[in-house]
Each structure stands twice: as C-alpha cells, then as structure tokens.
Image (cartoon, rainbow, N blue to C red; front, side, top):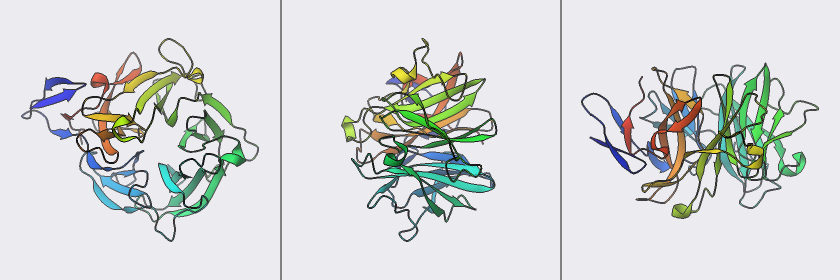
Length: 319
C-alpha cells in the first residue's frame, strides 16, 4: 500500500500496520479543538459550519461519531447579533467542561469577542455564561481565536487574529478575567489560531498564517516558535522573535490539500506518539474545510510533520 508525504510516495505495509486516510472526517469542520474526556473518549468541536458548534466522539482518533451540538437555537450565545460561533476551545476545569468560543461576523473586528460556556458532560448541553470581553472593551482589534492554558497554578487566555497575539490572566474558575489583570502581547500580526504546547522545558506556540477561507486560493499555513517561558519571547530556530513575525513552517499545502491551518491541541496515543488535527481544503472537493490529522514528530526539540505537508494515508494511532 502507498502513502504520499509532501508529493513523495512511500510504502505502507498493510500486513504490519493499520492505516487511515485524510481527511479523517470528510465534512467541513474548521478550527478543531479536542479533549480526552473523563470517560476515556476523545471529543472534538469545530467552528459552526454545522450550526451551534458540532461535537464528535471517538475512541481512537480515526473513527468519529456525531453526537450533537454544544448549543441549540434557543441556548446559543447572542452577544454579537447575527454572529457565528467560531474557533471553540475545550477544556476541563474544576470538574466542568469549559468551552471558550469566539463570536463574530465577517469584518466585525471591533464588535467580535470571546465567550465561555460550561457543561457537566463533554456532549453537552452547554450553559452559556456570556462574553468574557469584546474587542472594543479590551482594546485588541479582532479579538477571536482564544486558547486556555494553566501554568504555575494560574489560568490564562491567549487570543488574537492578525492584530497581534495577546494573553491575560483569568479568574480561578476560568469564567472571567482576573480583576486588575493586564493584557500582554506575545506575538506579532502575522498570526491567528494560537495553541501552546508544553514539552521538555519549552513552550511551543503553534499558529496559522495566510488566508483561511478562499477555497483553493487559501494560503493558510501552520507555523511554530518556542520559548522557555509561557509569556515568551517565542522565537524561530535562529532566535528571531515571533513578535516580529518570525517562525518555522510545520504544515504547508501539497497537490491534494491547501489551506492547511488552525490546528488543535496535541494529543497522545498509547505509545506516546503525538497527533494534531487541523483543517484543509481538498483539491478534489474544495467546498468547505475538512478535518485532517497527522503525527507530530520531534527533532532537537522542534516539532515537524513528515514531509512538511498533509499525509494521504498513514499509520493509525495506537489504542
């Protein structure tokens, strides 16, 4: 059996391994976020091309079942009139599933914002707690694409979309800003869709550059920098700062998929292999942004994807 990595055909032996094919889900599921829940299953959420924020469930990262939506027409957030629910970020905080979301309309860069909802179950229903902030309140244009992280016993939110990447401390329950907290810029104006991964004493800032949503003309590309502290400075391999829009490319287009960006959290299989989800536009069926998955490998404490672009067929995660 054959596998394609960055336009290079390599052998995959079907007698010795199980394989999966990209896209993992051949539906438009942009901006994925994933969590391993208390029941041992993985749950994935995405921007609402399926209205009200779709939720999928899997035991092995390959076979996914649709289990419903985080909200209904009656319970969906409403702080941005006619806004879409974009770029969810799922977490488990203090015994609750906490879903941060962006709400925006195209071009509404000063009225968009970030909200939060909670549930006792990863399948919902989620109860909306309203907005954390909107752009014109916090003074950051295009305040979307949030990411939650805990470090040193404190809780933080990172966010931003092509107007700088910022962070700020949250309250102990993660449902509001910490009183008196001040925002800090940590990366430049080339980026959106930030995710930070901690490994071997480094913090890795994954982000997306380029255009997400122009079909086959999309230039979305996944990039990364790293830092020895959560708040930076994040740099590329040559030590140049992400604050000045320097980075390493980790996932770029090939002849089958373009617009490869807005990655999820990294999750591990039972063998300790790291996996990442992201979306892409299929050259064969370019409508929407389909769900992709690839293994993240490491060399000298820098992440990479084999061949630097989406696989067509590869070994499954081990569960």
